[in-house]
Image 1 (cartoon, rainbow, N blue to C red):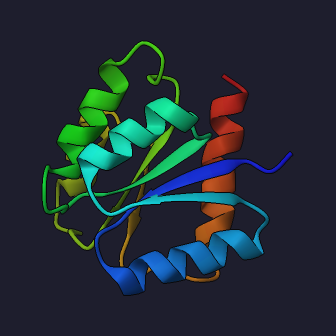
Image 2 (cartoon, helix red, strand yellow):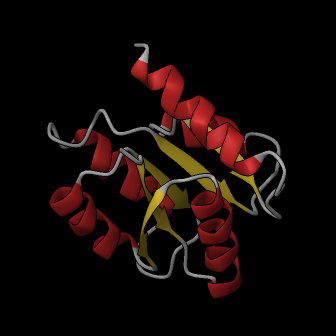
Image 3 (cartoon, helix red, strand yellow):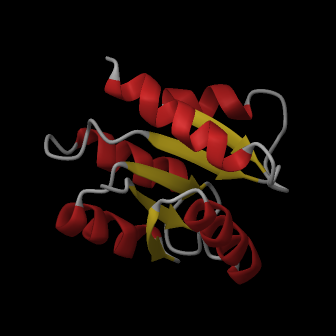
Length: 126
């Protein structure tokens, strides 16, 4: 059965690229363009992994990650920060918020789906 990825991204071009790359790799895709809707969707569908844009219009993606990780039913879902913020210390802040991985934009199309798979595999073995 295909693994389900929830993509939380407010930029339509970035969303479409992520969808295309992950669908080609065999993933089932759920999408949201706001953090609040993503948290609700995560409760309803319990995805295998969440790709969380850091800069969202309604709530910071790291705050949304903290909320997801505080929920006993959702806390085991791996979250990968997806961000254009690639300054020194940003990855550490993402990890402190509970992110299990960190991908910078623009997305490396060759490595993207493979990295998502690696995060899923590493969490499955824990």
